[in-house]
Length: 248
Length: 157
Picture (cartoon, each protein chain N blue to C red):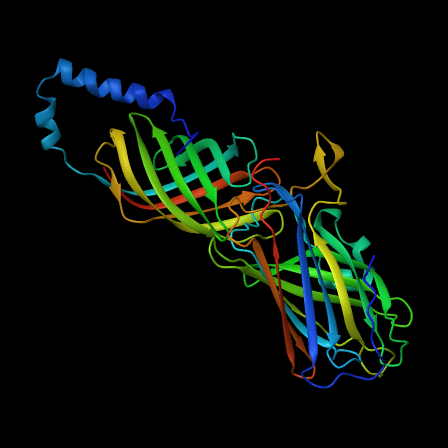
């Protein structure tokens, strides 16, 4: 599912990271409830591993409102998520899922997949939506990581952004941190089942996703991201989702 | 606003005014002698969505109680970080129309909002209605788009 990245074992030189970004709407129809997909790849331009990530700021196209979606009707507490994992949180707090490819400094360079990343609705911060990303690391990184991302709503003309602080992920206890090579995630109703009580019965339903803006700007819906690394370097990337055909 | 059809009570109020003019020709002079009355408005209302979910437009209907009571209709248009609102209240003897906007934030299953609205016009008893910015607060239940609203401030009519 994840792209194969070529990475040598030597650490990257400072300031040498490069990034690519991809995004999608599914379905891609103006005004329609949709699932937002995004993925990014990181590399060191001179070969070797990129420095560990410290923060990601993903800018989202203007005009997306987060009120008309029924995603995140319940809240997952970070402390519960850390201890019990996503199964300890309400089903109605699920926002999406994903996977990642990471590499340890002593690895083969091919990367190790973190197959399970869950996105959940956290308690709001500064009146902003908080998205909790839970990564369940398998060998050689046996760690459950919770990352908090704050969604700062934009306006109809200015982009919103999802700011994520990325903690250092130790490769082994007291060992050097791992490098993130790629992440693929989706936020939206695809694959999610919510529940509600109707006349005393628990009824399953599919939540309504955020709506694709009703107007597509010239050049498409622009996503961009700024990546900050622990060596103080940064990298940026952008991608525009093409405007959908007017009639389908 | 398109698709937001005021109820028949508006027509009834308009006809009542017309009848008064026919039966009492001096009514127009009385209008000049109108003495403004000012009240501290404090309204609470619960509303439910009446249109199909569209992602952007919420048409809400409910009942307002407080300083004045009556059926209330609210049309909300949802933007990225705020809603615009048209509020119509139909107390006994007239109607009030106000517009404004409110910022909102999402908190799990609820979206509290806060802003101001201003009375634009009225009919019947409230034909001369005016206000400054009325406090307009409430919450949207995201699972079914039902709304609770509080309105407060000084209203002259």
